[in-house]
Amino acid sequence: MNPRPPECKEKPTVSSLPFEKEARFEAIDWEKFENWLKQTHTPRFSRDIVIYAKRYLGYLQKGDLSEIGLMSHGKRRMIMTALSNLSKFLGRYEDWKRLVHAYQLKWSDRSKDEIIIERLTKVKDVDDVFNWIRQVKAVRPDFSDLLDLMALTGMRLLEAVNSYNLIIQLHRERRLSDYYNAETEALEHYKFKDLFLRKSKKTFVSFVPKSLVLKIAEHGKPLNKHGVCTGIQRYGLPLRFGDIREVHNTIMSKYLSESEVNFLAGRIGSSVFMSNYFNIKWITDLKERMSKGITEIQTKLSA
Image (tube, rainbow, N blue to C red; front, side):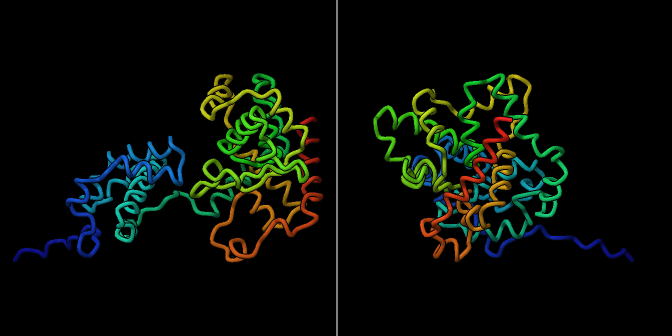
């Protein structure tokens, strides 16, 4: 009598396979897809998404995402970003979500606890980030004002570069007041949605001393994100822009509420309060408290 064969495990499936090879896949208008992406992403990132979507479209056609789970974190995340956006564009996003759930794919390899532990253990000296800024300034003095802008506002690198270049451009056009409110000493990013209100990463307003804005406007030369990164790495220095943002927000938390810090950092999320009720213009003493944090950061920058 033959022994009972081992039980075979079926591959995860979604009822009525959602992404079969069909006409809508054969006739994808990639140019239209890229233009759709540009509404919420930068042109360069939109192009990257299209490239990945074309390359890995077969996973959707077969309804089989098993290989994605075996890839490195960075590559897996980019492929998922591309296929997720393509699914939305094609009106098949619910099918995509069911596939992701069936194959137990995750956007991140780390839990929130692990991220917090890493953050706690990597910091050896509270002034380490400011020492790094001074090192970069020593070899690339042309990046000094950009780094000061990042330290004082907590903006992400791309946001800071866009802000830096916009200050220069509008000053040349004699329209700096369209962006910088001299009375409140605030850069009003929300007036330039295409640059600063991206799909998942946003910045609405940043308080910056008038002296720094004028210094950038009168003496700055346009920069680009790639040039800044390679310009620093060329000297054997690591990139620590994320640490600048982390230090800025940590210092500001001594003077501002959590909601205020989150708003200035561009973190709105799904909070009903933040989305529907929070208005920074009603907080009359905000600038005064912000100034205390900015002064502390300026002191550390000049130490």
